[in-house]
Length: 81
Image (cartoon, rainbow, N blue to C red; front, side):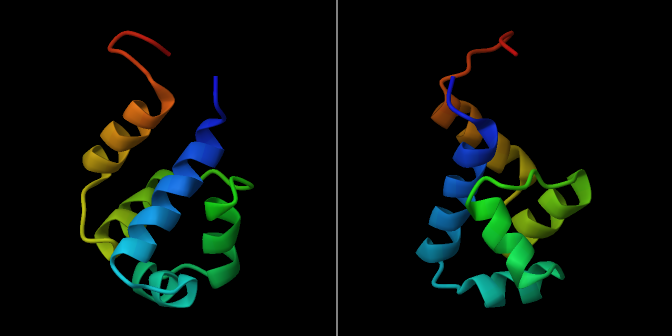
């Protein structure tokens, strides 16, 4: 299975780019450090629940939409870990 951290990072980077934000702008909107955004996007860090909420708000989406996209990217079906 593909790394969830890498898949989540790719998802965040794609969404950030689609709304035309730099890593610095996303970090400012989410009230997190720019280097942390970079680490998330490269799959080096796994965000906390609070960070997930901040990122989703900054990207004008919901945590549940992010998770559904991640599940789809990972090819997860209901009932799979």
